[in-house]
Image (cartoon, rainbow, N blue to C red; front, side, top):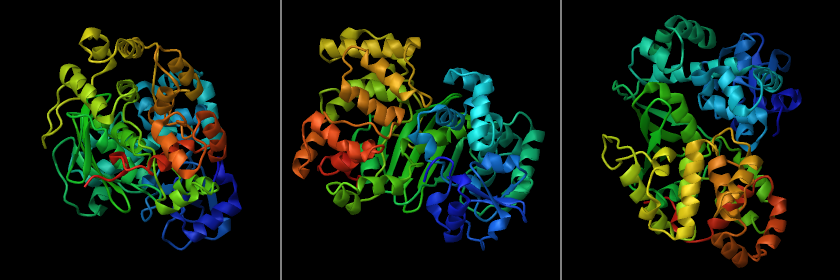
Length: 493
């Protein structure tokens, strides 16, 4: 699979005929005779090849006048893996659109964050995705509206504004155009499920591409959970979320064919952003088949992949938070890092109310941490300097870590900070910036695994050997870490 797959008609036809769910989100099939568009795995009888045209995005299908299929619901398919494995302008723009930037700041705000003109951003998105930023954001609003219509009992007017529409009329027109049903008809057709009418609380399913191995993913999140901000409870990972309009609490539960997501939001306008960040946290838009196939070409990694395929990279819902936690974790145990973070949370985090108990605070914002007295930090002087320099740079805006970050440039900025060596920068690149090729050759766990497997154990030699694993070295790290008995590698009981 690769960029621009929708232009390979023969390959797309084969994928549609085989109903292969692995291709969902890579491209969309528009049917000329019916005027609808589908995901490749749609269960209906495939149309004749001459009646199919292929588009790179749901927004492009909608702009071409096609309606979403009521059977396969293409708007709910996993997102394209392209946007999380690339660092170019289009990929960075797509990550920002998923994070709701166009709805909050408009296209000029999107372009400003990317450092390009509005015209350049629109031209590149249109060339690759067949739709500009407004159309892509509109398709996302329609998906959010459908989710709220089908899973809550909220009034339609409240749903319209929560989904990001400027008016109820625009909301009604868009829903009818995209789904060929009025909002009330969508709600009537929705499966009856046990829901909630409490504003801000809803349950949904987060899809992913199989195979999916939750062990190291949830094991890592649970083992490193900061008390008050995160917890593992009753088979779910729960944490607080700092969001543009307010805050939220999410519970994420692994299931064989989806992740169950239960969200409580102080402001429903944050729904799209919260979903996007949860998907990013769990790396749900990855393409595990492409990743594992590449790693299997190494005879040393092949048995590890075959034993437990589909490992994901545990990421973050807040890039600045993770950078702070990475510094707290320098040269100390997992337990010690949690203790340091918990003290900061109690002293500087914003308190929140958790209806289920257990969670008490949002992780402190950089602005709050920049105001603390360094002498209160129970850590060596050099690491205090590293910590205070980082939070000051984040608070002042001199360093920005976000979904739109330019990976090479951000690495350079981090390496220029005192106390930031290759390990700290690479772990931030892997888990906060989302670089799928980030590698940790100096990590003690990686070096230990390399020795046990007969791989080179010196950083330079291991890096040279890992060249064959590119561009998926961050996933190779997960398989190498998994050879150890550390709690991060096991789904909590």
